[in-house]
Image (cartoon, rainbow, N blue to C red; front, side, top):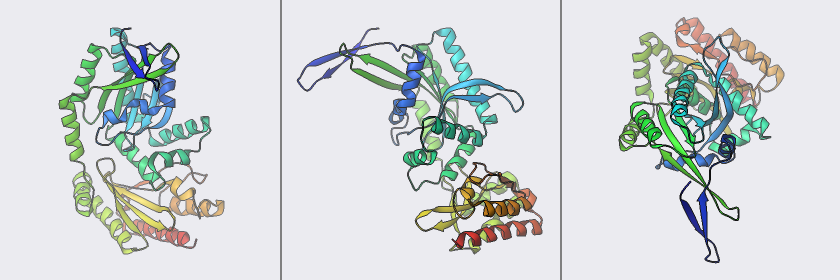
Length: 381
């Protein structure tokens, strides 16, 4: 390969570094695992650089609810906005391989959106952490900060998948002109999917110095204009916009149920606080119980899809419900209102209730009384 770059050493010596191909695709894949910043988040979003949370290498993607796994994705990352980023690595693909790579990656994305439950993504993340000898909670805090709401983040992942908001990144040591044209075309036409290519060239000197130079491809002016317009249209949900949206989507009856739940939460202030979701990643509100020196205790969320949802992990990972006896009582009470918690506390599951099942006044009253009981147990700490 032709071309090189030059380093000026402290002794003013000029060191020439020549472009060198990777020994294998595995070498390039290993580099992405070790150095996720090679995905050049500052080039993908120049206003707010993307940061990466590695979920898994060789992430299996199901093709439907009945059959076995068909595809295995090279890498699955999430950015700080909970956007799933599907990465496929190939060394300098030829025309035939290029078509195969593009087709498979679009297949990955299509099946992930339909058949990839967020619980399985969480399981992949935790398994990857165990394989690397790291604590998932610590990695998450390093990624988003100690004050981040982990349950809300995973909810955003789920909502992004449901909305088809994913990012495809094709990685190679060289992106051909033909590949570039295809990626630019797809990125301009596919919305909200973002399609990019990432060229990572390797340069090596005679004395063993090595430099990696990433370059993002696919962000034409038209594509950036479309994506930036979509970003500007995102909003912070509030009482007015939420109830207008859920009424339009789910009808007046479910909107009324959501309002009754909202008014109940408001009636519990200041013990209970309402937090509204932001942007298109989470349309709804969360009822939270503030905790001194700790993250707020999230009681439940209500979203524009007409669901009331709880996080089993949120309840079972901290007192008082991380104790076996208290967890059993919580399971029994939630089971009586149609929320099925796992056997073990702290397991990452998000049981939900359809608001349409709460139109009976007695059923709604029973749900609210159950959460009033939960609040009393938490306050006793």
